[in-house]
Image (cartoon, rainbow over all chains, first blue to last red):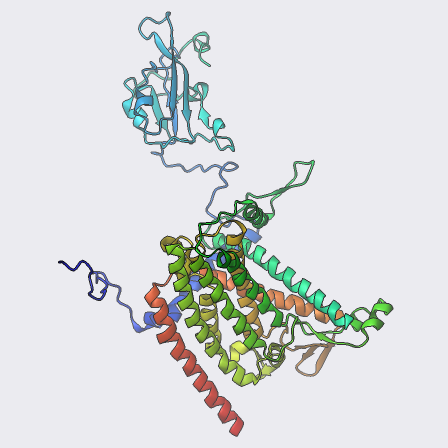
Length: 197
Length: 383
């Protein structure tokens, strides 16, 4: 019968980078006072800023205030790209909606007989940002380079989760002056674009 | 006598109001101070809207305490299938009540003479006559002993809560709370022995009066200057007694969820939290009374100020009473703020470190402090 209970006294493992403390640190009280001086100093500095009507915090009041310094490779918002004529590149193949791990993309396909090359187009394309995890798999899955993510935030703070859906007009509003892969800006007729919405 | 009863009721109303107000405001102070210390903004979204208008009063998030209280009251009072329903039900009160009772012996002002205060109303003034009352709910000779007696009851509450919840986390938390509070209560009492020796009394009002003098011509004769070591040890032990970081092992969130009150919800849990915040104020009040000269400013007495060089500044009785009340509250608030500063600065102890710290570090230091004090007092007496 094996003895399953380890009866040896507990001994803490010693690591290669064990801190070496001098007598000053061992006295503990002085280091505590130093720590209190640091935190108290930060408190005083920030309080002084607040009482002289400046901002004493690094935080941004989010919905009222937005940071300008998002990183260049921040990918916080989806956009749909457009063909040269202004229609969405999207062919409503549902690959992005299928790969989406959070299942936040909803596409309703429609038939357009006037465009024999791309007869399928999204009548509805909606993304639920209350659940989106910003993994970018939809961008990877897209066979048409139709969905991309840009350096922006959806900016949908709301007390109602049903207000956090990004709809088609907003997704198609991305309109840069130039693009590496696509002939931007699209020179499409506004009449054709109006069938969206 | 009826006059005594009226004064007592006024005092008790004042004390309970102040304590409950402190308990509520300190939740806000703790959040805001922590936020400012760490470059954040802190709670600032709760607001009161003036009815029929769109004017929203935010007031730096002051109403978050109100929102919290309301939330606690309105939540479901979830009860576990507890082992001991009676103990489970009374445990929060056993923790909460003695903390309120401790304030009964703490003097929050000098002497009140209602007859002089109400001289504008001759009928009331003559009814009170020349009676005087110390601004203290119960002016007992054994003041300091009462403080420790009630402090001991809070341990029972924590143990009851942990035992009756029939939950492993609760039981572990209660065991930790029990051994920790007993250890540190010993240290706390021992550190104050030196102070009792110097002042020769345990009556808190007397202790405050003895601190209104001046040492060496320029230092106020506060306990913190007479017994600096005891002040540090007392504050440390008191924070450990209150189970706050760095001594919050009984309710260490990352290990025990909420420790001995894991199984409590709604206002019962709120009582535990509230008791903790009121105890911050109580520790602040005790420290103020014992070490910071209580309600008196340096050079101040019940008639006004008496500065060196016989500069006598007389104040009206009402002005003195109000000054003393305000000075006491400000001192307590500063001490509360200092405790919060400690709570947001230091990391948590390991449990073996915690007990070793109490028995092998603080207890010998307290004893050494006591011995040195005894020797000095004896030497000064025999001179």
